[in-house]
Length: 356
Image 1 (cartoon, rainbow, N blue to C red):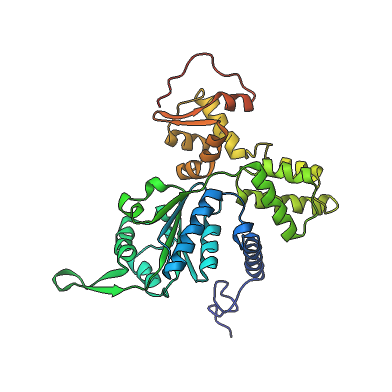
Image 2: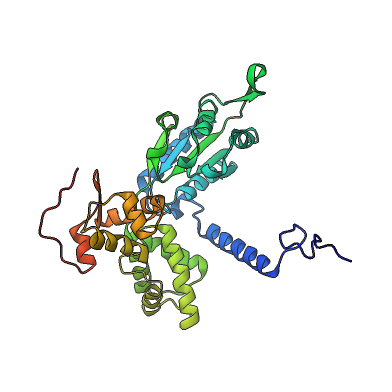
């Protein structure tokens, strides 16, 4: 007789995995490996962000001359612009290890203490989504960043005592899409702070050409240009669209990435020539139709579109503002004349009050 608790029946048991679970895990591993393959390995492979790269090169060269770790680095800007890739490049240039975590993953002080005490001299600690760390974690980071010490409280009440641990020399690289959510004391402890901006279409085309070569995709120049224009000026989106267009060309074409295949794939994905997705258009349509062009508050907009406020702020707003379709004012979000034109609607004649 076999117990129902046997690995044979326990689908979540460590001793047994359903075939579909193995397939999902394999697919996830393949996607991760593919993304890693497309990640720039050298400075000359990292396209765009010239000012940031030049400053980082000087920072690294100076640290090498002094034979010490580089200062702590804060990278901020919209998602998908290369913050993680830059952290990997810095580690590669310094020939050191990089330990990767994220703000939400560091839930307790003990989590951070475990990470810091396992660092080796010269290691880089990369914290993504740093704005999602709680304030208690930030306070523990202060002495770690400044004096390379970690204060741990043992016990509770009157018998509690503090132990100070020495940490090896290390560099913290933090990435965030919302720098305003980081506390002032934490921001001030970074030696350098860089903003990553949206890419030009020419840069995106260069990135797509490199990715096409790595993925061994036969492409037309116009197909690359069309895909780049729909990539929201963001490398991550560009590579994602390239893979989807490749899949479409393989299934419905000859495998060659032609402009016809790119057009059809983007139409199937409901992405227009400017890279607007259905959610982008729904946000604009909501402001224009339900709120007469705005202004409308973020909470009201989130409720009307059934989207999370953070998702609107971090994922959709930056690009809509980059295109000039949306303005963020003290009274709320406002759709611009360009947005009305793109949606094929008449811009209201009456003036609207817009606070600076």
